[in-house]
Length: 598
Ligand code: ARG
Image (cartoon, rainbow, N blue to C red; front, top):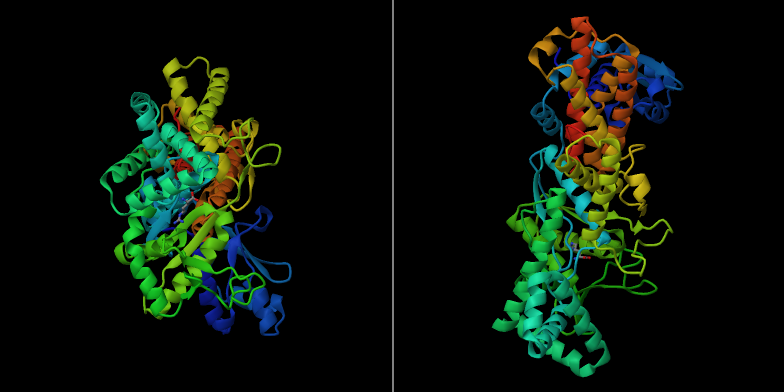
């Protein structure tokens, strides 16, 4: 029997076939197949209820008619029961579970299956994430965008999308006039000291210069004026100022990359706001000509009169300002130019923005504006989505800060994670060589930070807790990484190899309740993966992996793997191999590195 990757989809289409046979009005019938709570079998379809209600039938009678019409392919796969007022419960037959295990045995088989069953296969998706501002070190607020963005990018790519990772850095704007002013002051005062600082810790030094310039400009209107003049020179292409600005960009991006390396992040493009600087003129012309934008008090603005808050009739009219009254571009202008560029240059089908949910208004207005503009100019609309995330809170429930009230630098946070993980590793695995313990600590430490972030629903605020995060208990990275390491050690001890052809061939039919439960859970990988794509929420996948590791533990506790009976041993090794495959694949989709030994 060849197995569908996604049994829920296969059940859905069989139910539609049955509905046609039974004479249902197909326009009114949606099967709505979902993964069921364990006591209801593997999947439940509850679409019959809605159908019966609309067509004024008795739901149980309608369910019976449908069941009687089920095609043989379906009854070969699953046992069907009518439950409650008219739910259909499906329990996959052991043969269907075995067929799935046989069919999806390698990383490439899983990936090919995920892509072939996917609604986004072949689409081009731009994922805009991390996107910090230059001349500033990344702080904990930038963690979520980087971590969630990378997971979303991997999840989309696994589902067959062509993913373009774009780091939309903030490298343009008034702050650069202030930094350049402060830089020139420092140069004039003590050139050697400035150069030494820029050599040693360049990003920290530019961050410091920004603060100096900012404070001075706040205190002294003459400095503010001088910084503005530096900005104007930069904007008109002055060679000296452009060179300083370039250097700021370079040192910032190379410091960012050190952090990205720890997370395994590689951007395809780092097209910052400055890249769009010469592309905004076309936007102004078009959106004004097509009537989407209008002049108001010197600025170019967009109202959305159909919207309660962005209408000109709102209590406090809050238009989307796309060109400032002084003629300068802003965040909105460059973001509009960016959408056009992504549509034209990348032929993107979708552009996703992994950005703090507090920027929700900006994105809502941006998307409304882009949609109207594209529609009026006869362009193909692209899917625009803001994947907003909540704030990282300290255990006191307030935004996470250092004790002295400053933003926590991401670099320091990741170092602390590694140090804490090191203590755990030393305690649990003191016998491993020093270098290996250091390597494990880095993977567990960084992975813990990533996973704690991903395991939360991204739109919620999340409370940062070292103790919960770096723990072998609960829905944590260490728990899952440990499960992976333990699976590797089972193979080492039994001198076996995951996926070994002879073992696969020798496997006998699944029998025990724990074997069957594990096989059922493995099959659900397809649902977790497709749900993560549909919702663009990585926590769906985290929860699944956590449950899988739990079901595996129960199996491993109940059913000995290294038994003498060759057939039983082979089928249990096969379950171990698939659990390992799914755990490693899932963790990789989340952006974590895994370990063979821990
Ligand atoms: N640089 C911005 C910030 O730090 C985020 C940019 C997000 N991307 C975008 N296309 N607006 O808040």
